[in-house]
Length: 64
Image 1 (cartoon, rainbow, N blue to C red):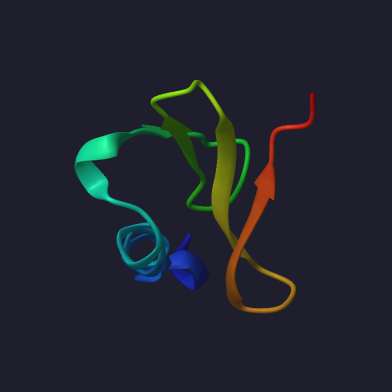
Image 2 (cartoon, rainbow, N blue to C red):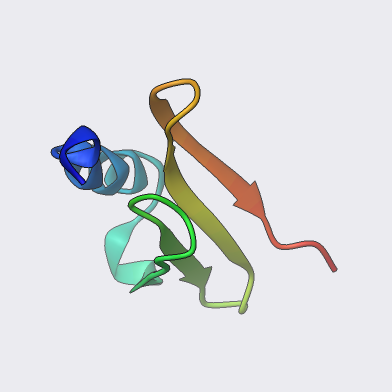
């Protein structure tokens, strides 16, 4: 998908800016554009992705 080119890097930069990388696990999550599952050492999970509507990185927390 040409319109997503370069946005995977933006998602990874956002994750790098907001987390200590050696304290999280990152897994591809293709249900969202450029989606990544981010899991911390406590098992808390969030999805970070490229929002095609607004044109920026967005995220959602796991709900209990």
